[in-house]
Length: 73
Length: 89
Image (cartoon, rainbow over all chains, first blue to last red; front, side, top):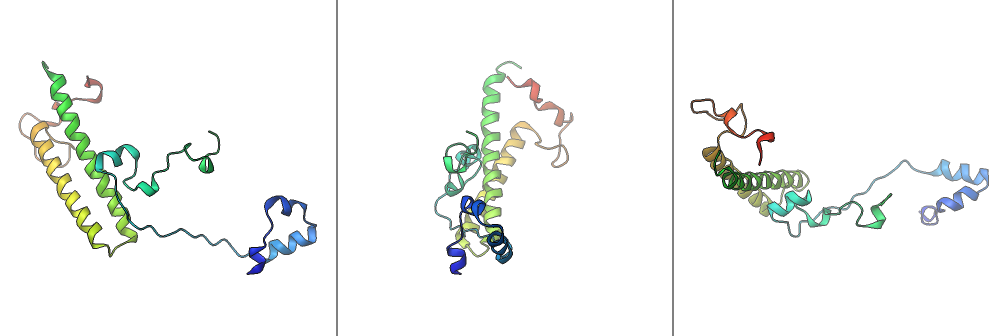
């Protein structure tokens, strides 16, 4: 567990000695995906939902607005 | 078609409301797939199904069939009466 807590960031990994890198990669588990469970709060009215493409405000994240989820804008 | 613009505006408004209701039903269906025990959401969804059904019936009564394979047609064949996409004003 602490092994994963102290996991190196990508640039540290680039600088690792080959042996350390191999060991690190060898110990990795296959990917485990996690998605937080959605709890309904409020909804957009039908017409607004149709315009925005979702009736759930928590899923309304137009591309390009949030820099964290924007690649090329 | 004289006065077609007013007609179209009303028709479009009703059609859009139907689309919005249908879309809300789809969204709530997807939500319920992963939250099957949320009674209030089921009630909301059932209400919206009712609303969509009502709007669809109203639209078809006033402007003719929305699809060519469901619903009954008067004579002459009503499907070709509704404006084609290139006939929009």
